Image 1 (tube, rainbow, N blue to C red):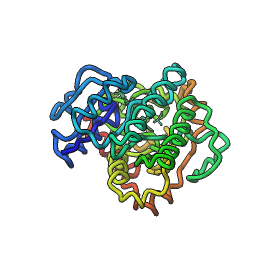
Image 2 (cartoon, protein in one colour; image 1 turned 60 degrees about the horizontal axis):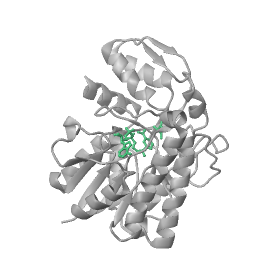
Image 3 (cartoon, rainbow, N blue to C red; image 1 turned 90 degrees about the vertical axis):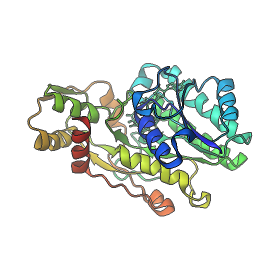
Length: 311
Ligand code: NAD
Ligand code: SER
């Protein structure tokens, strides 16, 4: 039987995704891999290997030895870290993708999932209900790498028939694994501080609106786009998907209503500029129409689940 490979499985999305894929396909059929040596305890219920996506030969060997047919490629440097290490981010975010696209082009993989981000948009994109097709001039190295990746995905699909599917995740909120260094990470740290009754210094201003999504919705979107019949996937660069939008002040108020007072100060740093260049909200009509996408979690539901999950 062919198997599924998750690359970058120890990160924020990877843990939730591996758990859900194993629930659907069986523990032995979903192979988790990460550059980090040790398998996170939550995903010890199935196979795990240390793997560097940039080690092309090792990736090829694993795909052949384990009879892999589908890859979820999650290894990347996120927006804030990428600004600190632009060349390393470009190398990982682009060469990692090429290594997987090439395996599919050579007929070794049937399907690929590769995530893009709202970071593909820039200051010249419409800020509200940012459409699927619009001006895209990202100003971060992360956004530039994601936009270039989207173009390559579409190119490999058009030229070589590679079945690659992608969504532009908003900022993701979850508790099973720590976030990996993005601009939206404040919306997770705030829960930790509230639960531990510690003061919270927010690195974005209180009125910064960003598109966000609860992890359960993001995992469902990922699996739904991968399970959709190929003819339904009309966009082979990457789909907009929307969850909700809120500011630090709004999420802080919601958390206070549930969990008591929070001592919060707003101290914007370099991430403010990144956030300012991103949309406030996303129009995901194409995902809704093409493969029936719809988010389930609003802010109250997210706050409830996060406080319950982290306590
Ligand atoms: P993360 O940083 O939490 O996890 C990435 C994982 O990749 C880490 O476990 C890391 O050890 C691993 N990794 C790094 N270099 C590697 C290498 N050379 N080989 C193999 N593994 C390596 O990131 P995440 O939040 O889980 O994001 C996964 C993907 O989703 C990324 O492409 C990211 O750009 C995208 N995305 C995430 C969000 C979000 O809010 N989390 C939003 C938009 C898009
Ligand atoms: N959450 C991600 C980040 O902030 C968006 O891609 O980098």
